[in-house]
Image (cartoon, rainbow, N blue to C red; front, side, top):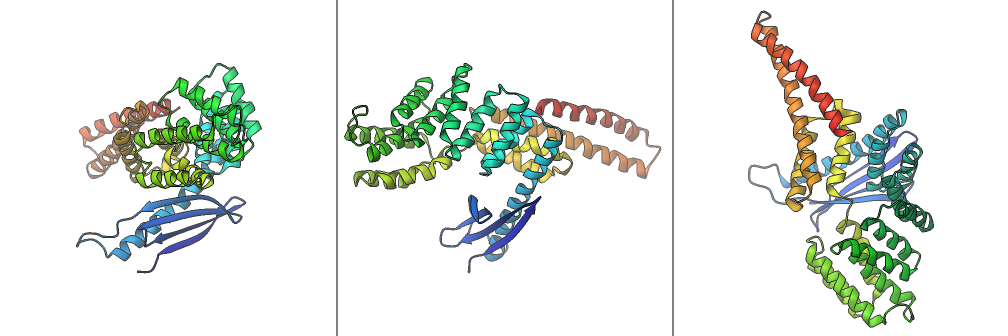
Amino acid sequence: MPDIGFNDNVAIGNRIFHVQTATNKAKGIVRCEIFEKGRLITVQTFNYERRKGEQAAPPEEHIKNFVRDVHQSTIDERKFLFKVSDRISKAPNANALLKLGTLFLKHNLVTDALKTFKKVLEIDPKSNRALILLATAYTRLNRNDEAINLLNRVVKSGYNYADVYNKLGMAYTNKKNFIKALNYYQEALRINPNYHEAQYNTAITYLESIITQRESSYLPPPSIRIDRARQLLRKVKESSPLFTEEQFLSIEQHIDRSEFEKAIHLLVNQRERLFPQDTSSLISTSFYLKFMYDGVNLTEREIRQYEQELKDAIKVKPEYADLWNSLGVVHLIQCRNLFLQALNEFDRALEINPSYEKAMKNKKLVENDGKEFLILLRAILK
């Protein structure tokens, strides 16, 4: 069976995105890429089942439908993002802008994220969340000094959390100031000894320092730095099912052969996959924007999809309170939709029998409670 693919140019305002989605039959994956002006912005890969039961559609048709769904949902998501952006810009709200900027970062639309977080700071100049996210965007663009200045403002405000020091460490690693980077990672780990991303970044920094500062009176000897990097990576692997044995062994082999550039390349390339933006936050963020700014078009299928994503995330991280809270909100919305469905059914009963007093009474009760549900949901989501 030949590989299956779709290509589309998607015009959104005065911008054009090229979306191409195709199978890799040898690996059993679908790869979806988005370009703007010839520059690759994002890449997503999805596994597909190559064997189906006897009653299922032929494999070729099944895979083709799966690829088409991935392709179209990617286009729809991009269109939705900019539609919501236009709607929020007409009545700027700091909370909504923060969520929008977070999704821009997720989709690697970094300049859009920068503009969005700056709008938040125009509304609330002391928003530490906006400062941290803006610093993250600057770091992505290698504008490390600007990121450091923002993160230092956060620290001076008294917001002393491990993730801030980890981000400071990353900015200083980018600047090749390994002493400061290691100090900030150490502070992050002092606050949270089980902060695996900081452990991972520390290992990268130790290996990078060997390449450019092999001999240093301020750093441990190279052999000790290598041992520490190995120990930290082993801790991360033991704690993260996403860090596979195959990946770990490949990195170990490069270190054994003193191929530090290759080891670092692998580590950096898989960092975002190992430590993605918080799953619960992204699911809740996307759902919030969809409900608040496009609620009329929020389908039952989309609600079920959000519900399943949250349930899947809970299986991995059952101790995350935010996941359970978000799932509760989804179930409330499903309840409201059932109220509205009931209203349609009472209307149908009255069409058949206009003098049906019980249906008329039930309709009035549902109408009142349906309005209260909408008010309740908006209050919860704000």
